[in-house]
Length: 148
Image (cartoon, rainbow, N blue to C red; front, side, top):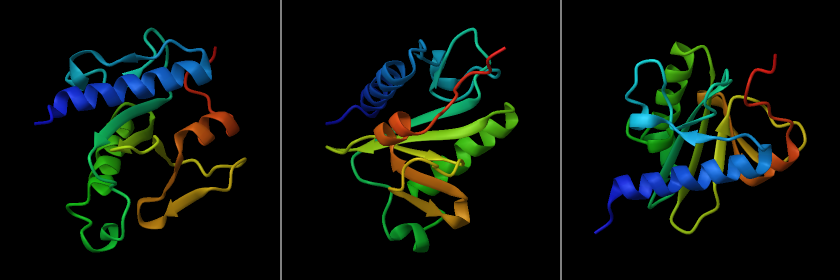
């Protein structure tokens, strides 16, 4: 039997380490799994003004399928994006979603249209872009904290 909390934590550590490697910022998991009123999401840079509310999902199956059109109310990607968008909005941040499924690479979902990579999918009704996280982090000039 799979422990979903352990699987979720493994996904968060994977994305945390990926972000650290690409940015040289000391990303950490959010304490208490985002239960703190003033700190939402799964990953952040402590003691900084984080520009994104970052959510991480690690599931058995891909949420990106043709069912996104017919099962919008129950589709994981739709629900995850709506949740992180609401949390980000409430915190004055932009939403950012990382997800992976069994034996897949990590994907990122963002509001920002990629400028330097052309391998992405735009989901118009969610107004978001989905692409490989590694490509996005390597090719796009992404700022994660407000630099003063």
